[in-house]
Image (cartoon, rainbow, N blue to C red; front, side, top):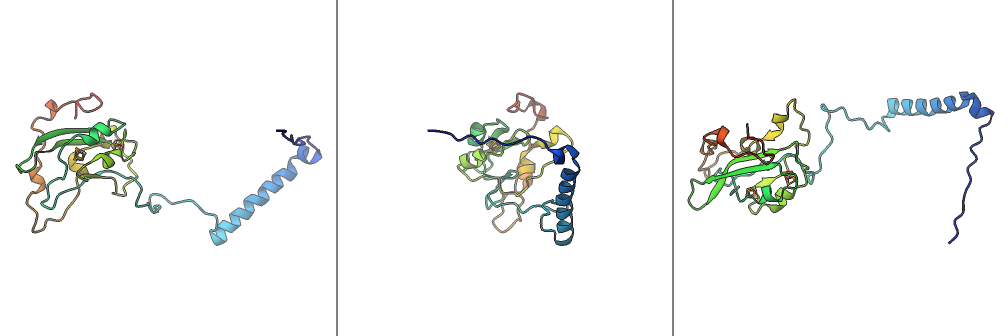
Length: 192
Ligand code: SF4
Ligand code: SF4
């Protein structure tokens, strides 16, 4: 197979040596776009964030949330599937005994380090109870400290409106008795 070689003439003439024509052509294009944008806003792609936000696709994976059962308790049964599958090792769960004997366990701790998370969605895929979702639409997470990205169970849990089926309230979700003695998280650093 033969290739045809095309030679580009890059020899500089008087026009290139003067620079002025090139600058004039550049300015012409700049001014054309400037006036087009001023008058018609045809080419403006700038988003005035955060006042203005881009619409987020429903399939976009945003910040996690922990869903609830009809009775108000978390759906999560602390099976560790999401923690096991997480490639970034950023989920940390500790199981506790559920007050309802028909349910074995629930997460006393459920922390996600959103700074380590790669938003792959594998935790959502792995969950057998549809207890974790990434459909909050929250994609902008900017905080001043690293600790702020460590989302705890109580930050992640879904809000809900109590109704006639509601049996448990948020007060029924106790925190670990001793935060200091809690197991080290996935990074091997004791939880705050
Ligand atoms: S989205 Fe991926 S990286 Fe983030 S917590 Fe879930 S499994 Fe881990
Ligand atoms: S969120 Fe789902 S996968 Fe993760 S521990 Fe709870 S029930 Fe298991």
